Length: 381
Ligand SMILES: NC(=O)c1ccc[n+]([C@@H]2O[C@H](COP(=O)([O-])OP(=O)(O)OC[C@H]3O[C@@H](n4cnc5c(N)ncnc54)[C@H](O)[C@@H]3O)[C@@H](O)[C@H]2O)c1
Image (cartoon, rainbow, N blue to C red; front, side):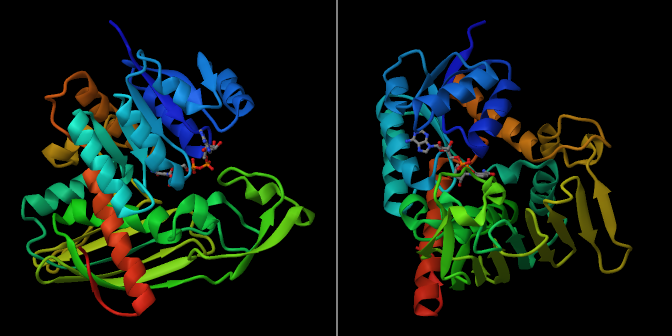
């Protein structure tokens, strides 16, 4: 059996998790890795036994044996890399946010369609088994008609002005940091689970640290804590630490959410609560195997993930028996499995977020930025 050859662009947090996730499939080989420098790529390749490494991703696009690429680089590189890959005839799986502007994202949707290539925006958090379970409960009518949704995506890794990452710089990240980075995951999950769209919103973004101490040498995500104070330069900040919004969901439902990178103790808390006429569900990424089901007239339930207890359509997102946790990196495997199925068979159903889904989140982001600037309600275009 011939394996599909893929290349991964980026050797940071996501480069590593994507490499590990792809390797769990069995039918796909991570044939090459690209970083911004040859030495970085080679060190990564050596540590994970990857055959080929380069400091210039374009070399890999010229290789006809490579069928697909994963774009796992800072946001501003997503568009040029994904575009070049599509133009070279590669299937593309791109990290979120798909691009820095919705116009760039729309261009990628167009090129992918013209070329007939598989395209995925990596909103992987939808694919926790219990998130799929929430979705199926809503589809089967167990929640009734949805009245309200609320929640947060809160982290603490940028709490101090000594915390640093490329996401802080708008030229590498885009205009929005916190909402683009994690708020988009929350909105993608809400729309996926509820089956409804955020129609309009009123948002407010805040940058608490007007300046931050930039390290004088480069750092990759989540390694900043090791740096010493004498290594910093003070720089002005133009991306937000925190965002909140209220929104109209579908024709009548209402909701509220926050996205934060300055919430001490919250490491990676995506929590989502959906309230319907018959019942409610809430889920928290820091306890991913559990689903809280709220009922008016009978005791509430905490359902622990067990494939035999999941809704039938959610079952294929759980590979392990009850009592055996499935977490963050398992969502990668679930998306990769479905993505590569469509690479192998272009008629297979598309069961993952596409570039069009990535554009949808960029449109919400446009509205959030506009609303916060105007301090007014804005429709999502
Ligand atoms: N889906 C998720 O759960 C999730 C989680 C974290 C990050 N992300 C997304 O993944 C992307 C990467 O984030 P990260 O946390 O891995 O960042 P990171 O800083 O850890 O890694 C970024 C990598 O990009 C590489 N890079 C920079 N310029 C390059 C170039 N020209 N060619 C090749 N490589 C280059 C850097 O060397 C580095 O290895 C971001 O877009 C982010 O939004 C998604």
